[in-house]
Every structure is written in structure tokens, then in C-alpha cells.
Length: 114
Length: 112
Image: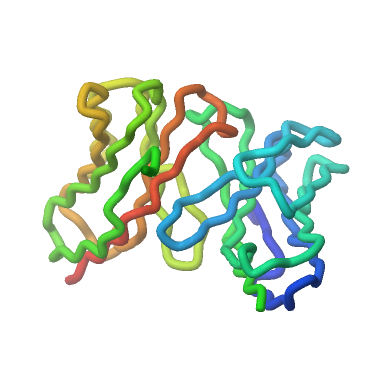
């Protein structure tokens, strides 16, 4: 039972490089989310999606882009990496948008921008 | 000032102790409150969910909400080494996940 799978687990980027963080879920969840977690700051929502083809901005979307072409996949793209984007990124999914339904999180991608 | 404040710890307790974890918040409109547990190098998992004020119990865990004081707590009875993790509080004024505000997390270590 895979759940939410994120790749890669670790990555080091140079300033100005681009990369895509991959997220896939096998639970047929319509709702998917991208968060970043910085030390001492808690999780902050970057983007979310309510279904294939529909995405919306969260609290901290600047510098990121997303797409949702299938129910299973929700990649996060960094176009011009900046040191401020050094963080741990978590993808999550849920059956419904209501906060009483549990979100299922992946194990995260640890990204360093140097 | 952050909307949600949580002492980062670390909190170190002996096995069997009662643990109290707390968060304070400033937005009186928050009415949905959650506690997540996050093991090292893993994603968070939902532990407790509470709507409005009151207590909720699930096994060794009790979540408490005091909206008049803008204060929420998570109590862990008979703590075990397997409870060693970071505990994150989260809250929102509406039911949707897209407005969820997280605390920074408290690191808990339960030693045998």
C-alpha cells in the first residue's frame, strides 16, 4: 500500500536552476496539496488541487508552479531556484477538502539551494 | 506575531509520564483544531480532530480546546518511547484544508 510517494528524497540545486518535485498517490483522492516546512515555522500551503485540471494558490505560491493532468500526479515546479526555497517539501492528498478527513502525507523532499 | 504559537521544546520525559503539549492562538474565528504527529524524516499524520470547545479522548490521547482563552492542549497518558516525535497543532476557521494554519511543532522525547 504505497499511499503518497514523493521523489526525490533529497536534492541540492544551484541558484537559478530548475527542477520538478514529483508526487503521486494511489488512493484515487481528488484533493492534493503541496506544503513547505521550514524550521520553527510550521507547514505552509504552496498550492492545492481539487481534481485533475484544477489548481489554486495557497499561502506561499511565489516561485512555484503546479499542474494536475491526472488524478494520481501533482508535480511541483521550481523555475529559478533561490536560497529562500531551501526547505522540506511535503505532498498530501485527501478524499475531501474538509479538515476532519485526514490528509495523507508523503515522506517529503529535502531541498537545498546553494 | 504568529497566529499560532507553539513551544518548540524539546520536551524530555520518562516513560509512563503524563505529557502536556500546548498551543495558543490569536484568531478568535478558529473553530476546527487538529493535532498531528510527525516522526523524524516522515510526513505528519493526523492524531486528533476537535470542533469548537471541549474535550476529545482517543485511547491515551486527550485533546482539549478552550476558546475563551484561545488555548488548546494535547495530553498523552502513560507515555511510551514510541510517542517520541514532533507534535504539530493546526487550526482553521473554515473546514477546508486550504486555510489550515500550523504551529511550528513541539519535539517530544520519551526515554525508557
